[in-house]
Image (cartoon, rainbow, N blue to C red; front, side, top):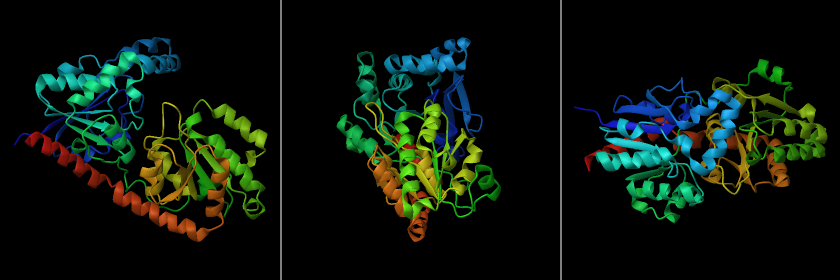
Amino acid sequence: MKKISIALIRGCFLNPWEMMRYEPLKEQFDITAMGTHRPLFDISGIGLDIKKFHWPGELFYVLGRSPAVLINKGLYKYLRYNQWMLGLERALAGFDVIHSADTHHLFSLQAARAKKKSGAKLVLTVWENIPFLGEKYGVLRHISREVIDNTDVFLPVTDKSKEMLLIEGVPEEKIVVIPQPVDLQKFKPQLKNKNLLAKLGCAKGQPVILFIGRLHKTKGVEFLLFALKRLLQDESVGDLSPKVLIAGTGTRETSLKKLTEKLRITQNVVMCGGLQHEELVEYYAAADIFVLPSIPAEEWQEQFGMVLVEAMACGKPIVSTLSGSIPDVVGDAGLLVQPADFYSLYLALKQLILNPELISQYRHKARERAESVFNQTKIAEETAGIYRSLVKK
């Protein structure tokens, strides 16, 4: 019996962590991931067949990677041109299911038009959680509507994204919430690596607070540093001398280093730089608490926060903010505070640091939530069920 054929379209955004939802399905379905030459992420570890397409943004790489990224980022905001995958519509002929992502991407528009020509079913994963964001600029307004009108099933990764779709007029019967899974075998509770702790300058018994993410304004790392300053000033906490590990790179890296100097907390902050994906587990293990102090912006709110799910799978208590889709992801596995509020962040961290029993409770809650909500096998089968139901119709 011929397998149902699936085209997974992610363009330059193709990445290995999202594809883990589909890799368990490759024995049941004929799956092809469709990305681009010069992708934004390392796709070498993806365990699916990949077809690469050229895209207009490649032209700027003759100027070097950094200038190309900056130019493409600027033009993407207004034109989305760099998502156009040359020859995609022709390549989609013959697939049973076309599975794209978000309503405002040009490759989703290409997918919608290919669907109309071939009669394939169109599935759309949705990460966005701000209503009508894709329609803000005049040149883009037609994209979302054409994509929405031609999509058979929407798969938002959080309830917040579902609510956005409802506001945009998508019928509820077309919406199924399926979160992004985590590899529970890779990300799991384990003992701290003493050599890594020594390398990072973490003393025995010293509380370790970990942040992993882009060093960008919207991640709110400045507020974590302000909270650390208050912890060190607090007589009930200061003697414990909490250490903050900041793993990531980005536009705020230099300013964050200067801020640690200004606050006189350099001895308690380690700038770890960018980490390879295989390094993450040991850093999660080294931490006692994971923090994501995300703050919303006009055109962005935390859409999911994969680091939150990885940290929970590793059994780490979470301290994060009431921003975007974070409450949907964290549930009862952590403490959530107002964004851009260093004082509330300080109080939440203090509560955990001074209460080992509470830390232990959240460790168990975190792992249990990862196993029940973000289970890779369960989510893969839910996705398979969607594909089968569509092709039967």
